[in-house]
Image (tube, rainbow, N blue to C red):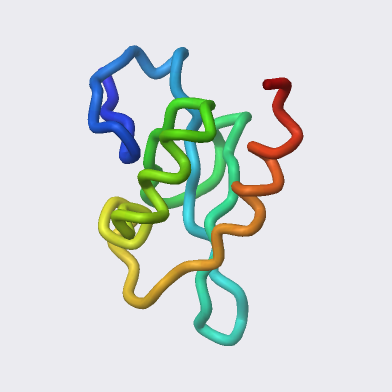
Length: 86
């Protein structure tokens, strides 16, 4: 069981999308979708629906769940969600 960082509901891991923090050389963090489940480090889980993404961004849940400082770049996750069928 995993908890969605957007809506805080508990689901099986197969029903959620894993995201992980990716660090660049400058010390900045970006959040990336980990559909294969093999990115290193701490991951967070999210329902693959736009409402949960919006809630997670609004609540600043990515930084808290991934235990990173500052505001991470979530553009890769937003692009992934915009490509999903409605």
